Length: 579
Image 1: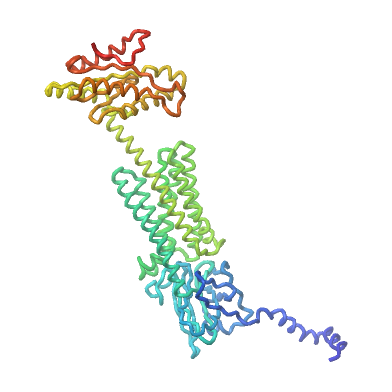
Image 2: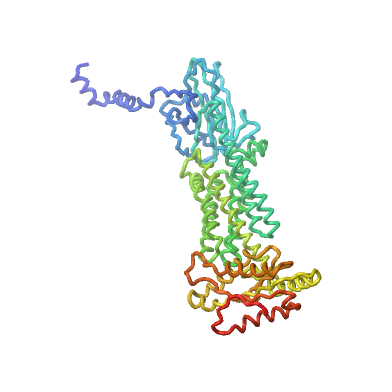
């Protein structure tokens, strides 16, 4: 046709009738290209993600067969992306992914398709045999793990590439909520290497969690502390949730219970969040600080239990959003309660807050995935597991320090009549009891003992110069120095705010008594590091030897006290001896 005639025909309606299909064919030419081949290469260390090598189509009826899917035009398919979230809004929605494996030649590698999403409802791989019939492999929560063709932590299906021809594989994905589907194409050695690393990581975490539960329960029994019980419950539920989300629980703990394996992925995280919130309430003693906040937190804990019980009966399309909403509320309370307690003087609340942040931060991408705002990441669960392990250590250390402090306080209260709470030295009653026993023993065995009365004479002066804190620190430092210089068989006590005593047990010679008194004096008068030059105790001591200076303990103490109380002005002696 001449060029003017062709132009004239295009300007007329009959000409447009064949020009429009030609234009559409040109526009659709890229989509009509042949589907790319998926090359199977076993040499890389890591498995290959199925990206643009695959194509997907969504069946909204849920009734399409592999033959019907194969007859779809190429324009119905779209290239897959590793982070694409498929819009599955009903139980009938199915995602079909097709890909062609390239010929593998004479190699004998075993290839698998792995979906690193343990809680996927169902995955079915269709492979067409030479006679045209389709074989299928099923995996996912709809089946018990024991019924999978290859029982594994997560759906694992075997590919069947040919040596001399490409093979079309069809993967059908069914899930109750919109989700991304990360698909890995892996060779057997790559799979074993990756599973070895994952097993080591899970084993370390579960071992630490088991040890923490045992320590917490033993501490709870010894200290009668509810916080340890709730911590043990929280740690146990966290470990079970990690086992469920990683697929370990479905493979090892309940491989034949498909329904529970399916619901455990939502029930266990709900109970874990509730236990975490209950632990935070107990660890911060919230019931003693704010009754209103305590009631709100308790209601949130009760809501976790109720939601966990109701989860199997909720519509499947509601589960992710329900867990996501509760996770946000629980984590905000779990962070807000210790933050509020910090402002009200709780010294353990900062560590509790740090532990909850370690849980909430890596849980954020997981919560976003529940609202279809983030894809299923390959490392998401293991980052969450690492945060849980870090939080486990922080909270356990905090509880142990808290339990130790409370135990020491309880011991001090129980021994208040025998141990001075400010210095840890013996009380006057204990000192007199031991002095009487020492005197009676010395009289029977005919040896001598010594009594050294020590006065802290500059306490008032130091208080005026350095403040009231000196009243607490100087006696404590003096007590510490006396304990360092005493012998194991001797006794050191505190008789009053400024008066201390050392009982030197016999048998002991006069020279040894004098030497001990001089060592006490020299050691206690040394400067204190980190304090000003004048910030040190000034002492005055009275020494009595029994039975040389007296045979009655009460009279001996009265005599030594009188010597210290009646020192003449200007008398600078530091050590007085009975005459």
